[in-house]
Image 1: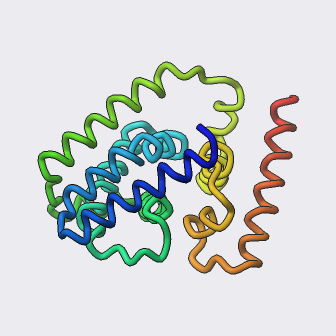
Image 2: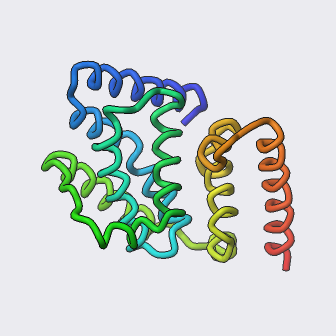
Image 3: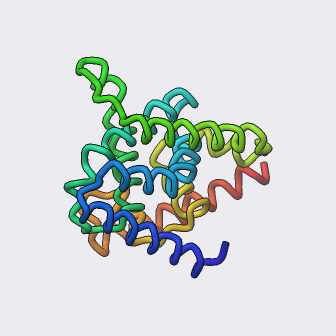
Length: 195
């Protein structure tokens, strides 16, 4: 898919979700977001989470947060960037440990069904994808480096969005340090591929 068609796809998602939110239909807006971004987000989780079970658990947590938080979405970033930030925060914060101690709010029937569809389609794609040497090396990286690599290389997100996802205070100097870190990471991966 070309960059312009990717951009228009995400712009259309924003418009649809915001229109549904303006109508007060948070459930339908969440379904639109999960259908559009779910496979991409679950693929990211499978690339950075410690295990497939953890990826699925965090994806469920994301769906819950989406349903609960979308009504208060301020629009400071795109829904896509906000979604990555929510997922990353769940990963970092040990979502599973905190959730054991509280009652989980059930997903609506339709959103639960959509999330299950996304999981099953994405899981079959991930299982048939060949695991090459780079994938094996990438799995050995710390979560921060895997996240940086996936967001920039696999998802081709712009630096501004990556900074909004990964950094609490993404000023220009912090973005520059993030880019430098990425450059060092690429060099290190090239060296490991040659070895």
